[in-house]
Image (cartoon, rainbow, N blue to C red; front, side):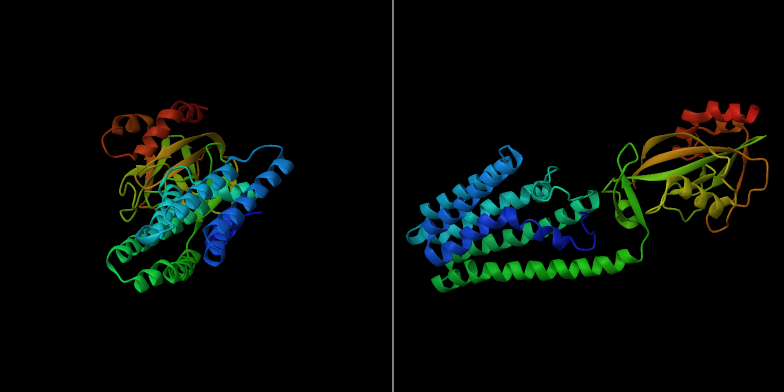
Amino acid sequence: MKLSTSKPLSLAGKLLPGMLPLLIFVAAELVWGTTAGLVAALSLGVGQLVWFLLREKRVDKFILADIGFLIVLGGLALLFDNAFLFKLKPVFIGAALLLLIGYSAFADVRLVMLMTQRYFKGLVAGPFESWLMQEMLKMFFWLFLAHTFLTLGAALWMPHAWWAAISGPGFYVLVGVMLVMSWLINKRRKARWKEEEWLPLVDEEGKVMGHAPRSIVHNGKSQWLHPVVHMQIVTPEGLWLQRRPMHKKVQPGKWDTAVGGHVSRNESVETGLKREALEEIGVNTENAIPLGRYLWRSDVEKELVFVFALFHDGKISPHPEELDGGRVWSFSEIDQAKGNDLLTPNFEEEYRRYGDVLRKMQNN
C-alpha cells in the first residue's frame, strides 16, 4: 500500500487505531466520569497489547507508550477532580498532548509516522509524505497551544460558563477548524503542485523512496536527495562545456558539464540522460559510457549525480533557451581555469574525479 501524496489527511485517518484508546478515554469521561473513562481506555490498550503480542510474538513498545500516556492523563484527571484545580485539568491534558504533537512535529524522530507504520506494515511513506504530515502537525501544535493558553486564561480570569465553553465545545470547534484548514491548504497545494515537475527522491544507492514537487525539492531546506544526470562530451581537442544562462538560479554565467539535468518521475537514468542531451545539445547518447555516481550538495539542493561520458566528433547544437552557448576547452585550459571562478564548483569536482579517464578517452 502506497500513501497518496495528494491526501495527507488520509495519513491522519490511519492513526485511528493508535489514537483510539485516547479517544475512548475522552468520550467515556464526558459521559460516565474519569474513572470509567480510564478503565475503558486502559482495557482497550491492554487488549491491543495482547493482540499484537499474539500476532507478532513480541511486546510492542509503542503500545506500552500509549498505555503509559493514558495512565498519565488519567492520573492528571483524577488529581484535579475538585474545585478550582478541576478547571486546570484541560490545561494539563492539553500540555501532555502538546508534548506528543510537538515531539512529532519538530524532532528528527517522526513519532507519528512510526506509529502509523506500526499499524500498517505495508505503508510506504517517503520523505515527502513524512514532510506533509510534519507540516500538518506543526499547524496542529500551534492551534493546540493557543487553545491550551486560552483555557488557562479562562480558568484564571473568566466566568465558569466561559471556561466550560472554551475547554469543552471549544476543543471540538478547534478540531473542526484544523480539519477545514488542512483541507483548504491541501487543495491549494494540490492545484499548485499539479502544474509542476515531480522529481524522484532516492537513497544513496539510487533506490527510489518517493516523489516530490520540484519547488519543494529545491527550496534549500528539504535537502532531499534526488537523481540528476551529467554527460561529459570528449572531442579530439578537449572537453565541450556549456555556459550556463544568466537566468539560472545556480551558478549563472559559469562554464559547466556539457549535459546536466534532473531525472523526472517514472524515468530511468538512461532515459533522462537521452532526453536531456537531445534537449540541450542535440546529441544522441547511444554510445555514452557510465563513469560513476557521487553526492553533490549546494545551497539549493542535494543531488545524486550519475556521470556519463561520450566521445563525440560531430555537430553540437546548444539550445538557445537551455544554454548560453558552449565551446571546446583543452585540458590545459581547464587546468588553468580551475579555482578562478570561471567553472562551476560541480564541474570542478567532477573533473577532479574523472579527469584522467576523460583524457584517456581523448587519446584513444
